[in-house]
Image (cartoon, rainbow, N blue to C red; front, side, top):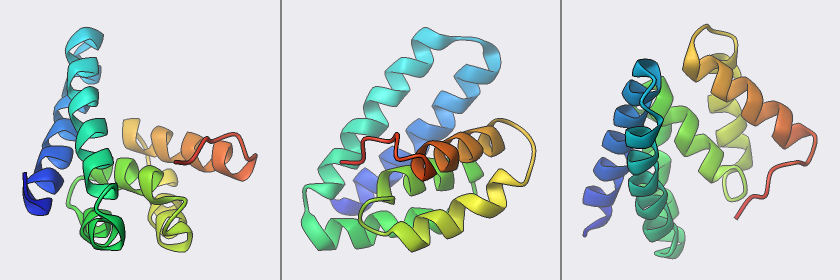
Length: 114
């Protein structure tokens, strides 16, 4: 897969997982999570070029995608990731909760950032 295809796969899987969570379908949500985790790892394996492509997700229209991308990019693009998470964390809904929890765990040093 190309970097663009991996980026699209990551975003589509995050959005699909959130739909499953909203419906209460954890099993299907976990399948989508495996897809975006795999796509994210493949992008990051491309080094700096992959990270740069991944950063494009920080401006994705879906707040769920922005939160997921920011969580992955905390180690390599800390300032950009935190700047993406903070305004989302001020909102409401699942993405806001995910952003809040990511920031809290990051600030406590509890996240294993790879």
